[in-house]
Length: 312
Image (cartoon, rainbow, N blue to C red; front, side, top):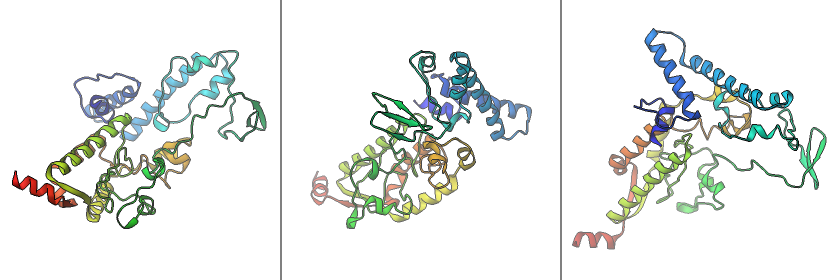
């Protein structure tokens, strides 16, 4: 897991032990950057990446053309956007399915389905009869935990998480907030981090929460709550580390990564994460557990537990 994340964030590794199509792109970019350094080439890294991106996408478009027998269907299936505008997926039989006589591709030219009737789906003014419709979307990626959990989190003074975040996310590390003692967000991307292997994000933030809870139990801490000043400092660190993804994602076709084409208005999934990358983020939260809690958190103690600890 760490090897995979290291490769795709250009952290040197002895061996690419995953060796999949995800890491392939970054191996190419890493090699191109090494050659740029070796030769003294002045090509900007962004331009270099764009060249590799186009080459990679040309390979994918060629694979579609070579696999799908009907040229008009193949053209409709070819992706004309940058590699990471969509999450790359892999299948040994998806493209081949379009060669079957009982499979038809309805190309809506980017406009999507107009409506669903009692007997089918309407697109381009034409109704296509259907016995079964499988929805491949419908979830709100990157939404706050109070939206996706089916409940409203309530902190001190009756403040809800929705109210706290009505003008934008405020947190420490994307996982803890003032006004919400003993509350830990797992999978926090806004002001936190994300990784192509999202389970890695879940793992590092779950370990972070677990370590804090273990300390509270061991030391008889009843409540731990990060301060508003700590949130301010994290906000400043995020600004310092910010990486501007706006131009890249605004050129992408609409999708969840660019807020359906309005990336500037809601860059919560990618644009608002910690700019130092997920591995550096992991170091930051680990170091905070060692040295930052006393500065950034207010704590109260369980009196009985403290007395038991003192007598022991």
